[in-house]
Amino acid sequence: MIICWDEDAGRIGPEVARYLNEQFNAIPVGDICPIDFFTLAGVAIENDVARLSRTRLYYAEQKNLLILQSASPQFQHYKFFTAVLDLAEHYCRIKGLFTVNGFVASVPHVAERRILVVFNNEDFQKQFRSYSLQNMDYEGFPAISSYLLWMAKERNISAVSLWPEIPFYVSSNKDPQAVKAVVNLFNDRFQLDFDFDELNEQVELQNTKIEHLREENSEIDESLRNLESGLSLNEAEQINLANAVNELFGR
Amino acid sequence: MAIKLFSEPELHNPVMLCGWTGIGNIGITAIDTIRKFVEAQEFGQIEPFDFFYPNKVIIRKGLLEGLEFPGNKFYFQDVGGNDVIFFIGQEQPREKATPYAEGRKGYEMAELVLDVAAKFGCRRIYTSGAAVTQIHHSVTPQVWAVPNNPALIKEIRTYSNTVLMSDIEGGGGQGFISGLNGLMLGVAEERNIDAVCLMGEIPYYLQGMQWPYPKASMSVIEVFAEIFNMQIDLMQLEQLAKKIEKKINGFLQTIYEAEGVPPDLKKHIEGLKHTKQARLGPITEEEQKKIVEHIDELFRGEEDSGKRHV
Image 1 (tube, rainbow over the protein chains, first blue to last red):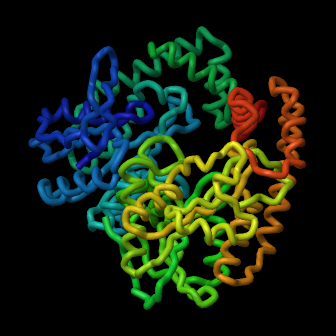
Image 2: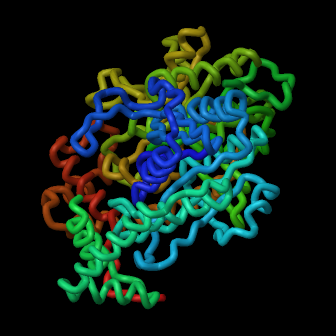
Image 3: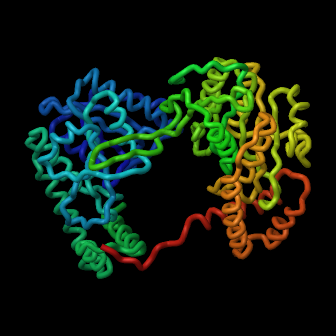
């Protein structure tokens, strides 16, 4: 089961879910009712369309793949994750759980996107030794994926959370490069035979647009050159770059 | 979700002391200090899952090593010949963006704590918190006591340095205790268990601070020491109180020198040094709002600019 959260950097969750669902003709097979988990004081508007917070399970039969796309629960997390794990364990009898998350980083958009990982058990971690993944070290406030991994561990369900790097200045927009890194991993792992044409086009489009921006704006060009050289930017430079890219991609 | 008891000590007519986080962490500091001093033993907890989001994850070399939740633990010990149960809650369950428990979750938590109190035959519950008022941070805080049974008033009047709401100028015997410190009293009363809330005074200008206010915790501890006829070493708290007082002095100086703050503010705050009796409320709500807004600005911190590193 692959779990994709709606709200995350680079819109990584929804984009990974979209590519997988579309390419493998996944069909929705069920929802988790939002009462208890989401504020129901109204409805959010996204891209001009009203949409209630939702948790929907899709099944791609041709690849035996389950994709759970969900808004991050706001309340009763324990109850929510219990429902997800009951679904995974008892109804779907999954072999493993993967969560997709965005890791905002000070990296240039042209760099290869590392995927940081957290496993909930060593045996599962060993299975991924041959993949180029970066083990995470962290101590602090837990993300919802960490809570879910911990609960999965309590139930002996192997799980891993994937955190592809997302350049901070594209984090408010889609990041096809990060999506590609994640889908590539799934492609290898599950032998999906994924067609990367559309994703590659999107990556190319993003790079080309930013390249034009660099040609038109010397400050942006300098900021990006610094990032590409491994130097960090000060706060004003970061804000400037992020604003310019947001405007470029129309957000 | 459950109460998990690791053991069931034999206790005789115990009292229960409940400490939760809150303004200045006055209550939890007071009760936890006593707990540690008497070396109370842990015997149970309330499972956190229905009430709290975890507050810490530990990840090492790509492996999830642990997940921590706010603690909700029960301890027991003989204190001066009295069996005492301690309950320490490291967070109050919330349903909205406030620091205090309210609504269904708060009520459920109170009920679970009282279930344990009832199981062991507790004759009385004490909670503790903060009394926000117009005092100066250099004076020894009084303790405001609120019982859930009028029959307790006579006993409360024998406590040193302790006042009832009716003793407070402008109080008229009325008031409101936010969160679980208050909720426990109400829910205990429904279950015919006596309860008292002891609140240490804290200056109104400090209510938004992230710092503890050990001075008030010490006042509360002294009342408990009297109740249980015990001596307790307060040296560490005294040292902490001195450090905090120094910080407060520095902080106030910044406020006094800041733009946009009412010019009479310094006069009013410093004048509180000579106030004999606690009074309710700030100078005016508008002035208090300006102070709190300015405090927020101070704590947002300065921008870091001009640094570059690999």
